[in-house]
Amino acid sequence: MSEALASRPSRRIRRDGWWPWLFVAPLTLGIAVFYLWPIAQTAWYSLTTFGVFGGATFSGVDNYRELLTDPTLYRSLGNTLLYTAIVLLNIPIAVYLASLLNLPGLRFASLYRVLYFLPYVAMPTAVAMVWRIIFNGDFGILNHVLGLVGIDGPYWISTPGAAIVAVAVVGLWSSLGFSLIVLSAGLKNVPPELYEAAELDGASRWRQFRSVTVPLLTPSISFLAVVTVIAGFQLFDLLYAILGTTNPALPRSMSLVYYFYRAGFVDNEKGLAAATAMVILVLVALATLAQFRLQKRWVHGG
Image 1 (tube, rainbow, N blue to C red):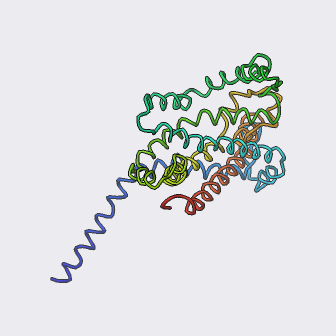
Image 2 (cartoon, rainbow, N blue to C red):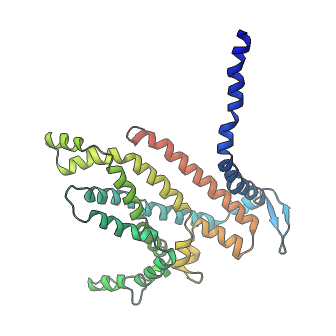
Image 3 (cartoon, rainbow, N blue to C red):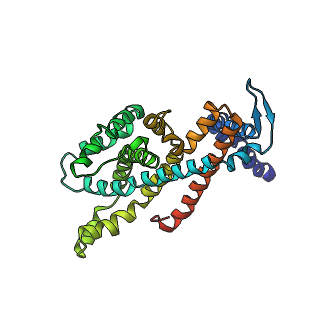
């Protein structure tokens, strides 16, 4: 009798063990079909060479050898890193703006948040068209303003070096609203008692911002840093819409994803494009892993 009773829990555990798998099966199937299988397929294609009329033949690591010896790849990587570094500046700006919008008694704070968030939800093509007019070297408003103070502005989006910076400025501007919303939500979880205690201790506004606001926002800042870096490595649509395909600055302003696009859809080198995609995947994974490791040192409570 005792043996029969002892065996019942184990059978119940084994029987109940299928239910969790049943509930996660749709998500697991979706990840396998739409994420894991395409990654595996791309990894295989990166080891092949496609003919003009289709058909893949195994070529080993030739695509990777060609890719890693191409100076354009490293230039594209540098442009991607520069773009990402500039766009990351939106986080400290958003921290300061969020703290201002969280001041007690501020009127129209919600309206300001909506206005800051609008560029993030705007169509990238529409945003690019507006900024192309602003950056126009002949009649753009930016060069007009610079001319008022005696500065002769360049042709921003057609000058190598300046073009990727111009695109990064647009990326910073458009992503500021998302960071502001995330940080504003984080500020709602900061206990007001901490500010009251700091004020009683004689801490100034700046001291409260530096010693209370910023440390307690580090989880949100860490999240935004990871998301921004991943988005930076995926730069394509904004670059494509602002610079176009006939821009003389494009060869020296390409991102990694644009390099992938040119290899796969312009030069019809699908094996090389697949190898580029795998390199981007590895770089994003390494960057994300490094951020997760580093956040343990500076994130409050990490």
